[in-house]
Length: 357
Image (cartoon, rainbow, N blue to C red; front, top):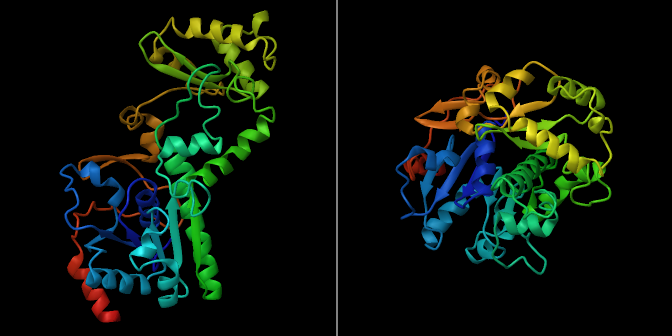
């Protein structure tokens, strides 16, 4: 889908490399500028975010190597960098210089706090950003410390995916106008933006009393074997199906689906029921129904799930379990992407510069 688009990625950690991987998954030529002397990752899984990319080793503190990076950026469509504000400028690779060389460049900047604001120069990580943005507010039961799947809500959801969306929007503008843009993708902004859907369902913003974090029909339950089942039967017809399969259709305790005062009792009742049987028992009971209940699977278990196997969502490639590219397109299939070694494509990339210089 992005055939003919060239992206330069300045080596970083977390959401920047993930965003660049996604662009590579979508067909872009992504060239990663790796640092000489960086950690050599023996296990292929440690290089997963480099899949489908090309690698060149450049020391950006060396004037000659910095010039090479600048020359690469000048013949590219987009840039991905994830340093604190001001670092790229001090290296001589800030937006003003790079866009003077290449006016159509889409300059993608990935940070936690953003390019400006009181915290923009501070260190931080995923959990700090989503805590400040408001996105961590519902991430637990009332009265318990918030806990989210590491990196999914901040680094990936509010960070990398918003950077990808910004770069794609910038490319559309650049292709039509010849003028590039700077994309300021901040995890605090993206994760806050993601809250719009939840806030449309929970205007009171009171933990434990919204439609998605309080009800007995929207949570996970422990099973007898130590596994867990997820339940989220929001619509009444799905709720009725769930109650029927649980043998609770005629139980007066469950008549009122939306009374927050009843939710603690209803939750306790369901917790007791789920604890009486194994995860496999409950998964089999709900399979093929509209009860909106499913087992909580690890990635390894998900790779063995019949539905996930049918779609090829999880794949073993190059000895590494990895998720397939997403989304999918009717007229484009992703190729089997290699996991490059650091600096593997130095000669090829320098030959490209020689041809275009």
